[in-house]
Image (cartoon, rainbow over all chains, first blue to last red; front, side, top):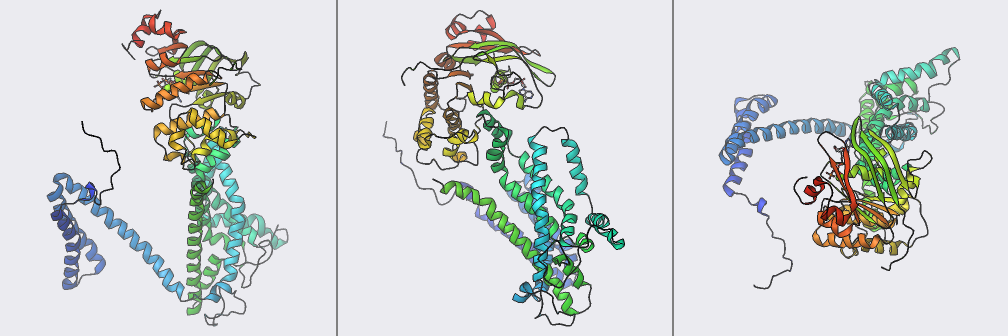
Length: 364
Length: 262
Ligand SMILES: Nc1ncnc2c1ncn2[C@@H]1O[C@H](COP(=O)(O)OP(=O)(O)OP(=O)(O)O)[C@@H](O)[C@H]1O
Ligand SMILES: [Mg+2]
């Protein structure tokens, strides 16, 4: 018997599953390009509306072409696959286009108002005829951050505690609590605002009210909107941690809270961050509760407990109803700033969520 | 390893009965596990071996539908006594599960030390403990250069040995092992068996196995479990391993150990 060669070999450049029949490649390429070209031609020649043509000309042509090619290459089963693929791509593109066009219009209209002072200045001394070079949403950004931050401060711990109660304990009230959380999640935001308004503010007209409109009242009105989102997603995240992991910790003699703290929680970490984030995203653009519970302001107010305070949604709402072009542009600018804020938050959460794995590697 | 006269505990079950919901799955299991002895639990799939093992360190009660009656005595004290904390029980009676379950957010090294951290122990030499535990679980040579890699980067069999190392680091008085070698190659299996033999110098060991040769190689005594059609599982035969395998009293034991059913 000859000597066995045990040394490692270099990886082949091309993997077997990447090798394609060149004729099939051409067919697939043709099937993905020709229907498009043909329908553009038909649309132009017959002068049909583009949206109509997409559905009545392009889609049927594309299906015929793909089914034909699918049938040719894979036989009978290729037909079903081809239809499935075409519908998936077509409708996901449709949704994608809608989403992008919404974003696009916000960005295009918003960009016109964008400038450094739009972020940095407040609205002091700004009238409806002031040009866009003056004034901005700085005060509204701060107000939104303060109010949303305050809500987040007590909602995230409470939401996660509810999730812990639902998944990690055998408490008798679990189904009641779960139903209650679900019920709250159906609460329309305007009702939440109205409720807080009626309870905390309205009596003040006869000077019996607990408080006047203020940032913290807005935070309270946002609380029932954020809580169910956080609690439900956090519950899902904790439920995804396999029971075997908890058992592994218990079998080593870990007390329940340490097992939770050192095993369950780290395993659910990225899910919990997602819960917090989607909670913030849920309320950051809420308008109705804030209109009812906060008083708009043109000045910067860093105290969410006293006085008028601006937020991005109420700023937007205040300006979009006015007729002047500059006012409307300020509103679009505020919309873009909200989008940017959400984007920054999501990026931040991604970074935080993946920080753990790199740390585990580095530690010696 | 020298033969040290040790303080390993002895364990004893008296009329252990188990239910899941209303279903009676184990009936009147009374077994004695003398200190420093290895006991093998054998029997067909589904007869209640894993379930019985879990009653021995109070992991059983973590299953919501679990029911239990009977006694489990550790050095004469009932671990099911109302003023015994199950956490203390599990500290003394370690367990290796049928399916490997390393902690996915921890590195290999952190997994070995996880028990000590989880129980708040202090004053140990970490790197020494990591090395001896991994050596005893016969996985040291494979992982010594990648101790900080995530535990999930290991193969299934390596993960199982890591879980064994994790239990060994806690130095329990009794070690319960549920088919610890079912995912291992013959070489690792042999080394784990050697480890079990060494460990019995300082521990009392209960091992569930489907491998008859393994039961004969490592155990001093053997209990044969059987659940007949619709009835709860019971111990059909219990005695010295030699006797159970070579001169069983019950004909069903004879059939099982010779591979005629199960
Ligand atoms: N969590 C549970 N809930 C309900 N029934 C269970 C549960 N765990 C086990 N059982 C039932 O209890 C019986 C004994 O199961 P057990 O896991 O102890 O068997 P086993 O002897 O370890 O089998 P195997 O050799 O396949 O591991 C089985 O009939 C099983 O269906
Ligand atoms: Mg089992």
